[in-house]
Length: 353
Image 1 (cartoon, helix red, strand yellow):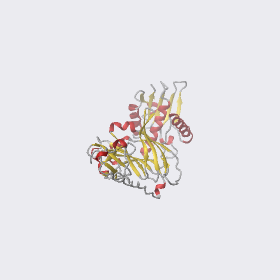
Image 2 (cartoon, rainbow, N blue to C red):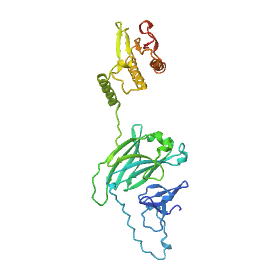
Image 3 (spheres, one colour):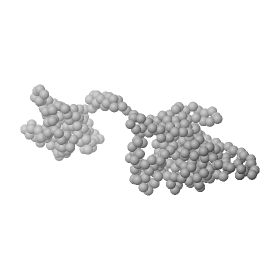
Image 4 (cartoon, rainbow, N blue to C red):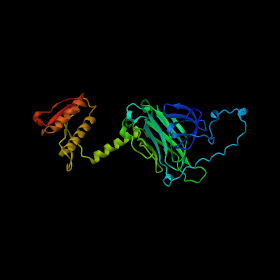
C-alpha cells in the first residue's frame, strides 16, 4: 500500500483514498465525504477499479493529452445492502474500549469503538463532559450491524472521559420500519477498570478482550440513577424518620438537670434488639458500634456535653472497639473511665469538645 491507493474496508462498508500512514499498522483513509477515517492496514484491501466515490481533492490527476483513446466508463458496482437479522429488530448499542497493547496495560493507550448490533442506521453523537459543559468527540452515521472506530486516547485523558453521553436516532433506508424513540444516555465510566486487564473481557464483537458499556439493550436505554444533593438529603432524612419508628434505639437517659446533664447510653445488645437470632458476634458488635456513632453524631456540636456509654465489662471487645473509634475518628473529644462506683469497669464517659 502507498499514499493515493484506493482501498475498501473488510469489516465494514466503505473505503476511500489512503491519505497518510499512522505507525506501522494504521492508515488514514479519506472517504467520499472528505472525512478522515483511521483504519488498520489488515482491515483494508487495495482496489484497482474506480467503483468507489472519493473526495475530489484526492482524485488522481489525469493528463488528457496522455489519453490515446477514451475508455468507457466502468459501471458502478451497487453498494452491498446490510443483511438483517431477526434479533436485529431490537436495538443493542454499545461503547467499546480496547487497550492498544494488552501486554503493557499500565502504560498503553486505548481505542474507543461504537457498536451497532441492530438492523437500523444510526445518527449519533458521542460526547464527554468537563466543567459542566459537553464536548462532541465524534458524530456521524453508522450502518446496521457494524462497529466503527471513534478515537484513540491515552491514560492522561481518562479523567475527561469519566462522564460520557451518547445521543442517537435510529432509522432504515428505503423500507418501512418500526419507529424507535430518540435516545440520550449519560454514563459514568469506571476509570479504575482501564488499569485492570481482567476487566477487558471476551465478547461477541472483537477478537480481543474489550470493556463494553451498553447504551441500549433490547430497545431499552441504559439509565444511570442520578440523584441531586437535595434529593439525597431528603431521602436520608426520610430514612432516619423511618428508623426511629421501626428500629430499636439506644436508651438515652439524662442524669442531673440543665445543660450540664450527663447522658447515659446503654449499648448492651439486649437493650438495642428484641431478638438476636441469626446474628453472629461480629454482626452484634457492628450494630452496637453503629448506635455509638449515631449518638456521637447527634451531639457532635454540643460542647461540654458528657455522654456515658455503658458497654459492660465482659471480654472487653466492645470497650476496645469504642476506644479505637475515639482515638481515630473522634480524637478531638476527651474520654475517660466513667464513675467506678456507679458503673464499675463497664462504662466510658466522653466529653464533647
